Image 1: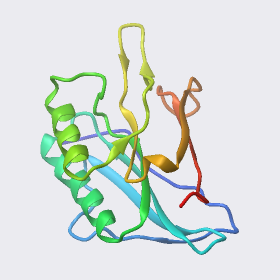
Image 2 (image 1 turned 90 degrees about the vertical axis):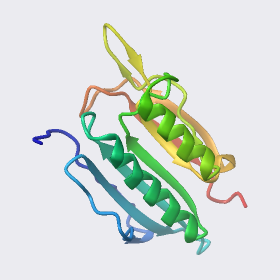
Image 3 (image 1 turned 180 degrees about the vertical axis):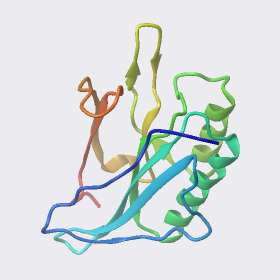
Image 4 (image 1 turned 60 degrees about the horizontal axis):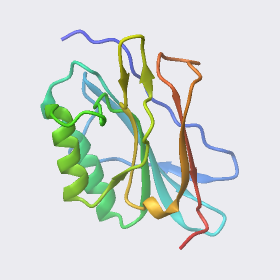
Length: 165
């Protein structure tokens, strides 16, 4: 299956200590790319930040990789924020991908914090760029910025309070 698009990266300020986290039994696939970092802030508290791209034509079975990522992060007992283009429209309810994503969120008591449409065309408005977290109380706000710098999606801004216990 030939697929185009995607690629992920994370920019980290120099003063923050970080290391890449390996997710056991979960490797990037032709239909999914991801990266996870463990970051330590000034108070020596660690948290994880991840980015993900799931190709829109990838099989539903790749949702199992997404579940495996979340499951592993929960075993580390740290706060995490996993952002990216999941290509799962959370504004629909009958889509098989949306149902699967909602089951994952519910099963692991996770929250998806983006509420505005992130891909707007002349014909549709979809919410496919998400921020999944196990600590929604630490999110000050999220915003969908109508700036198409790299892709035909809105940029996602997530403000988190790392000092909040």
